Image 1 (cartoon, rainbow, N blue to C red):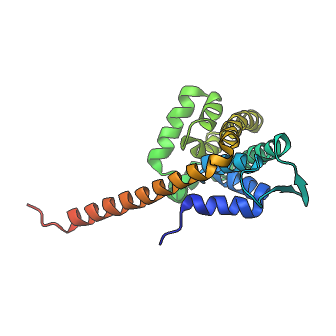
Image 2 (image 1 turned 60 degrees about the vertical axis):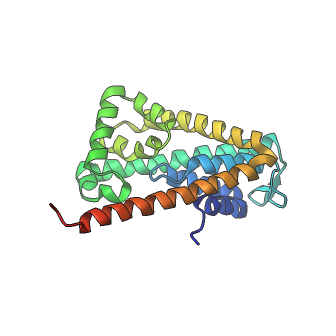
Image 3 (image 1 turned 180 degrees about the vertical axis):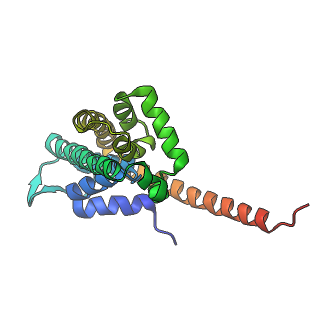
Length: 215
């Protein structure tokens, strides 16, 4: 049986707490890592929803409630911001030629890069802030921002502002769910299975069309 994507993420946070949130959000800044699930679970963990799981930072247990919530939000925000700076640096150093050669590995092929360029042309510096609070698109802003030579200082501040809003919103939702998170997580796992079934069906249909005689 395929392991649940959400299950893997939440297990990582349950086992490694603040550090897992930091790392996963840093990854999400350049490659989608389900930041919604990460911060939802982080908020629920901060509320004390999971028996035996605590928020620990530098060996010190943080009491459930406001301080745990604040630590989780800061971990997500700072992790995402540092990851975003790393993505910007990749774009600055590699430029458009790098993305044209290797962008597909980062889900930034020529088509996506053109869309990102139109996005930046339309919104200017605001594209970073707006992009950070738009699902999915938020993971495809960092490297293009470097490619298009956006200055680091405004890029960093706008990323920090947008990611703070994002982390507060989803961690807050997770905190509000509290003990009810388990039911919510179970629903997410069913979504995982539906996605797998849909992907298998699409691949099967594509193979069938390829093998079907023309005419």
